[in-house]
Length: 281
Ligand SMILES: NC(=O)c1ccc[n+]([C@@H]2O[C@H](COP(=O)([O-])OP(=O)(O)OC[C@H]3O[C@@H](n4cnc5c(N)ncnc54)[C@H](OP(=O)(O)O)[C@@H]3O)[C@@H](O)[C@H]2O)c1
Image (cartoon, rainbow, N blue to C red; front, top):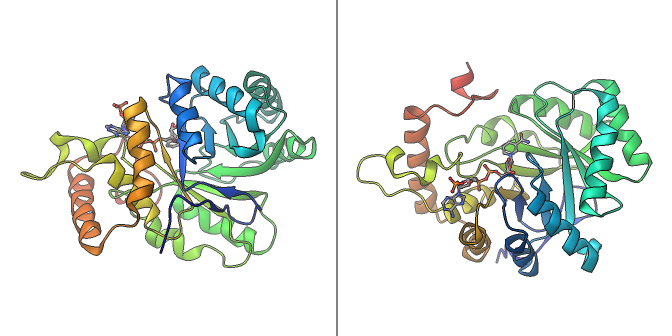
């Protein structure tokens, strides 16, 4: 019996991670994050926007039990020399000595050697423990996975778009995950920027999906270790936490959710298309 409330190995990092992760972009209140951590969530992602309330939650939680949380900080820096100062500022603001992951954000092509070297330097200095990469060019992950198989990738975890509307990862990413030295996988945009929750974007006579089921959709694919949520308030945070109790989708639920996803894909363009999508062709 699958229990999504149990933590799982995060790729080959040796870290045990909760199936739900919290993204900071919409968080205005530290308490909603702290409550979710008390309920078992341990993966905290301080990006794409480093909200101060989220930093406050990290500070409070780390003071009590730093080892109890898995912290990711993101850098969108394209300039190698700016990455270190950005991470050091984040360390000071969060009141921690290290981040578990430094996420190099939005790399649709592999980052430059200089940038990777700057990230590896932070790792050597003990300021970050592992590197992660996010992309909006899903097929590019195949090359990263080939590097992982050869033991030549600096990245231990990859973060990508996967939801009921954008299911391309099922064909252009997940089948390519290496079996040995398997990297971790984090899925973002579970709600497709809220479109799957929006009455106006549904097929006629069909109710919008519950956010809970958007997260369940992602976690029902065994390639996904962690699904991110971007809660704007306590109710949204708690709904995401409750997805973990509900467990995997039934075949009928998946069929319905995919039909809704197909409708949204055909009728409502994404905020921006990504490599692998038909929209991007
Ligand atoms: N690095 C990258 O390349 C990358 C790419 C994409 C996303 N991200 C980050 O990933 C994190 C997660 O974002 P996401 O888009 O995946 O999160 P999400 O939870 O799928 O979506 C967040 C938005 O969906 C709505 N929502 C969520 N739960 C809801 C509920 N129960 N009821 C009604 N509406 C609900 C809210 O919209 P309202 O505010 O309108 O209520 C919320 O702002 C964020 O920090 C984001 O910035 C990073």
